[in-house]
Amino acid sequence: MKKADFNYSFKKVINFLTDLEPTFNGWLFGFFTLLAGSVFMQNFLYGLGDKSVEVFVMEALQPFYLILIISMIIIFQLFLKEEIAKISFLVLWSMWFTLPRPLVDRLILGESNYLSFYLIEAPKELLIRFLTYFGSVDKVGILYGTRLELTLILVFVFFYLYLKKHKISIAFFASFLVYLVFFVICSLPSFLAIPILLSQGLAFNEIGRADVAGLFISPFSFFGGNYHGFEAALFYKTGLIYNLILVFLLGIFQFLKDKQQLIALFKNIRLPQSVFTAILLLSGMIAAYFYYPSNLTFDFFSVLVLANLILAIFFAWQFSVVINDIEDLEIDKVSNQKRPLVQNIFTISDFKNYGSVFLLLAYLLALTVGLKYFLIILLYTLLTWIYSKPPFKIKRIPILASMLSAWAILLVFLLGWILVADNQALKFFPYRIVSFLFLVATFTIPLKDLKDVVGDKGSRIYTLPVLLGKEKTCQFVSWVLLLAYLISPFIFQKQELFWVAMILGLVNFIFLNKKRVNQRKILPVVLMIAFIYALIIYFWVL
Image 1 (tube, rainbow, N blue to C red):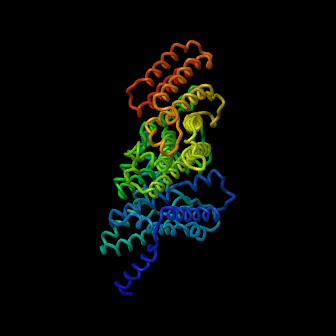
Image 2 (image 1 turned 30 degrees about the vertical axis):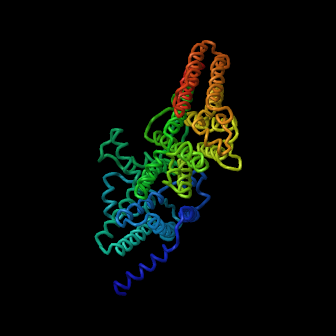
């Protein structure tokens, strides 16, 4: 076949594969379908009965291929400068190459025991592995199927880039970058082990494969939790790392896709509320620390657990921001004109897609940390959904809406507590303090609606400020909170707290009744005063 004929035939194949109009949901379903097929086939051929549910879930959650796909999209975009949606749809086809991997390993290695996962190697051997296409094939690590999968991907990348740019050098360099990314992802445990083991006193040349393996496959504890079994530990530890890499790559992807939208998303994160949720998580951890002091450790993997959980909460909150902004679009045209939807930076359809990404990231990050954390994040997102969306749209109902929001807030505190408590137990959980915070939050959250009175009234959202007016709402809340502060020492049976409670309650009362105050600062200040008081009574109750 002549070169021109080959190019023409290859181009026809590419056009056939990409001539459909790609959608975001279609891309997601396509990716997860092929991923599920690959995971199922590997476990089916390996023996479904030989793996625990825990290991199966942790393996399925690994964002290995998602990182690879996004990296390939970024590489393609850097070389081709084409529409990123089209590139994403094209690169998705490479996921089909993952399906034969487990079958190839089974056919070549037979029924003997083998484990196909990451390359765990001594650091000094990594360069040799890289230069020799991962080197010798053992029964553990990068096996024949993975190498065939990589070969097919590299051939696909090379021919596509050559067809587009007509330069072998560009096609080769792009293929090399994909190979480099694939190798680094597969060898990540070995690379990450280097600084950790060096910090433990080992010299670079002294680090062996057994040291790397011991770091990643040994049972380990994080705060109040633990994982046993080398596969569960390996997938857990690598998952924590891959999740952070995935978030970083998604940021780069969005920058290449639309820098203006990325900036708009950052400006729309509601920074005070985002910081407040992180503080609530840390507060729950500190509260549990006094009962479980030995559990508050900050080794490398515990820090990764905490980072994953903070990001899970952050993205769950961003999901609630998205659905709230969509539902409140008409209100925001009056009272929040700098919101990105109001400024037409996003279409509603695009904004929903970002909400889906935030939700999936929140669930992935939380489920990687553990099932209980996932269930709490799931409940949090469900509460935010029924708060903003029909058929309930609880935000229309005064007090009940505030109670729902307060419940969601305290779920974050609960996350921090179970992270540190032994086996996520609630034995010493400070119910009285949490009840006080719930009461305070219930009657302070309506303050956030002060700035939206005109828009809420026009949309028939009957918040407390709409019913009472701005001034009377502040007065009502100030009296309720002053009463709550004054009776709290008797609730906690600590009468010596009375003067502290009275002072903070009066500060709160005077602040809420000031004639000139920035309405956007009212809620953060009131919540901060309550938080300070909660810390004081916590130490006193103990």
